[in-house]
View 1 (cartoon, rainbow, N blue to C red):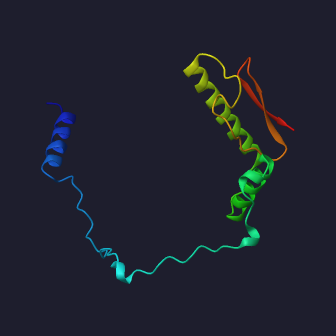
View 2 (cartoon, rainbow, N blue to C red):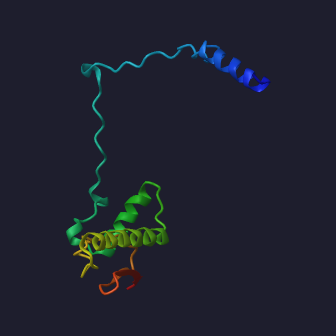
View 3 (spheres, helix red, strand yellow):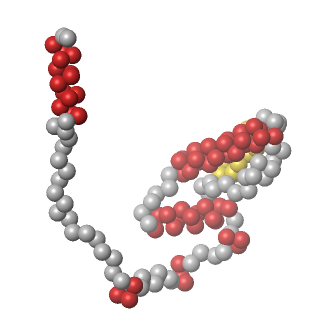
Length: 141
């Protein structure tokens, strides 16, 4: 037996015997206990202000819906970069169109046939679809 295989054998035997096992840290944390239902406080109601309510989605154009969605996200600190929105929308369009082609063996005649009924785009953008090639482009209005 060579020197390196002997060293390896000693380490393996020592680990099997328990010498390599680390001791767990002592449990010093107190257990978490939930309050009984009778002692729980109800959640505070969500603030509602009718002045900031947006109209129903049926009453808005897609551009207005996109602007309203962006305003809601910005209210919570999220900034929607129009470029990243366009890239995401293009990715979703391509994926759905390709899935339709895989399932049916042809390009969809329209975006609605591929199951695409709504595309969230920044204001001033629209989708242009070529049914002959299956290519969707996002262009300026």
